[in-house]
Image (tube, rainbow, N blue to C red; front, top):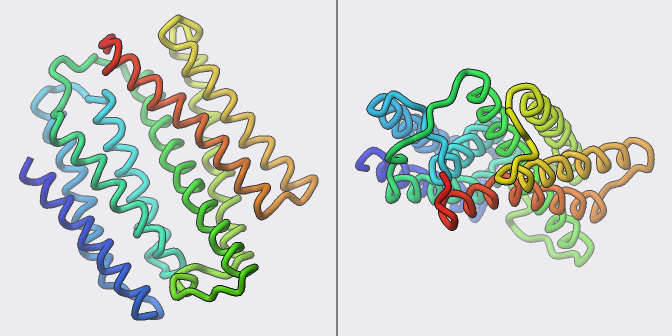
Length: 262
């Protein structure tokens, strides 16, 4: 619990540093990287120690939420280290802190379900795909805000923390492409390794995941063939991400917390 609280404090410190740098209109601040990287290490250590104590990888609702936040924070640190997308941390680090807080308060699952390597591979791919596409959703929101501000000729300070519009859009679609491939791998490993993807407790997750994958795929095709961009890209990204959110965390919330089916 203590390590988790320190990690949360470091996440918030990194967030505060980033907000202050935007307010001061600094060029490429680096000071936030130290607390952010320390937070990442302690966040990962929190899960590692829980798994070491139980001998089983815990991927229940709160653990998965925390790990997804960790994945998003790692990607943010990697992308933001260049200084071009440091604004990501202002959104992602507080989300990672909230996910870790939920895991710390709830604690590891009392009887985590043991998984063989195939199901673990499927689960880890799912977390990585979710983290990647969640970053894409945040980028889509930034793109929408940036376009709206430019149309209204509102040149806010926070715009300096974002790359040029075309560069941001390119980063968005590259992130979506990476997430699309990962989500495809998740669906493939599900078909290969999960006994019955259409079982009653899995059918909603399966259908919503496929719908999300198809929506992201349609967006990529629309970008390639029809030149989709701007508001159209933002809408498709957020709808597809909402489907994925319902598929992964919506179904886990209902099964593990509402119906207590674990």
